[in-house]
Image (cartoon, rainbow, N blue to C red):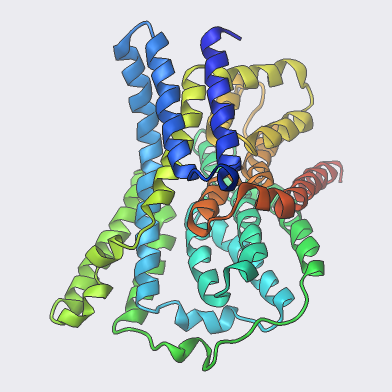
Length: 422
């Protein structure tokens, strides 16, 4: 490893540790993530032979990251708008259960299947908002939040639109829709059920139902319409992408613009409804979470630009011969690093002539990259969102969620391998 690579890896490790020990060093993880991104790219620019070439790298990666940031901004605004209209009150009664065990099961299965239809990013934002209503006390919803991360990632693994990596493999011709669903839905379900069973045995007793139920707060004027338009807009994002070919964030922004027009028409005559209009809603968006996401992704992208992630992929190709070991290694690395550049690297290493569409290698990569990120909170978009929105600590996640997520990940791999033998 050359000097520049050593410096970049060292900076990344120091920043990663600072994020892990956020509560000990009393420095916000968003500040660390943004600082880390700037420092890593500064090192990359200083060693570059051409500033113009370095600018092309940073512009290219910023383009990819910005799409995710705008996607999140749009999705968070839509969810917050629905919540401000008390739109979720119409469905919370159906999701609520007095039994803690039963509610955890409902939350897990809803997240799992919703993630396959929407995607794990949108689903996580939506489920966090719903959980705040279902379980008002933060300490009581921690296990449910962990299951949202695990279930969202597992649900995204068997759908071509459920995770950015499965979408990449689908668009580039490595996987077909029907085969992916047939071969990966059972391993993905097992990956979710193992942690769910682990937590199910720990939970006892009942949740308290708020006095008067969830309809104690009446739905705001136009709340049902906003719920239907908002949910319809989110669900239509994959269809919009398929129909137009435009990236998902454009679909979310279109849905947001439709809602913006609708709420302006609904509320512009009533000065006391200012809190139900988009300009006010935007002031409630957690910008800190978006900046944390920006910092983390840009930090990882500089490792890709410097060829470090590609080197990891090449090492995998050289020393790990079996498909299942490659997948297991990729899953482990995905718990630390962003899975998108790792999958991109593997796509460049293994050609379709040797590994044709729907071969076992591509199936395993799709499963491992999507679900391996659940092992650590920083390993997936869902985990990072939960860390940002709910202030979940890294060590809290490691203590309560890493082992169940790892066992679920391995159980899913075994399930897939058994499926090959049958």
